[in-house]
Length: 88
Image (tube, rainbow, N blue to C red; front, side, top):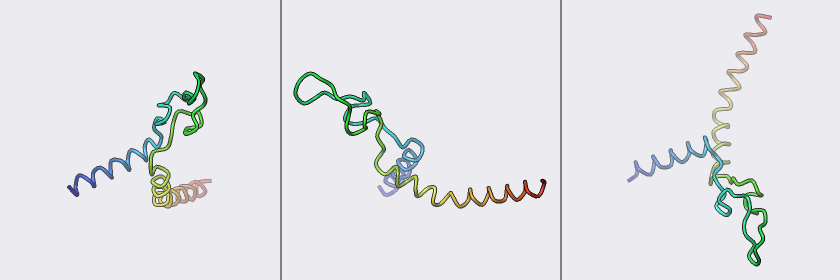
């Protein structure tokens, strides 16, 4: 049971990192919803007429990933710059 829960959390975290957006649950990606009264349509308020919403936890997962991986990328860029300056 613990293994299954761990795999689910790891899979969801990977999905939220790779694809942080999903179809809007209110308008189903159509960007408009029916008015409560009448036959008119109006822009979806949940997705602001984009048709996409963030997954639950996607922002936090992205920030955590870049907080950990960002330092490694910065170190690699500094080393690359030092190599280029040495050749110049």
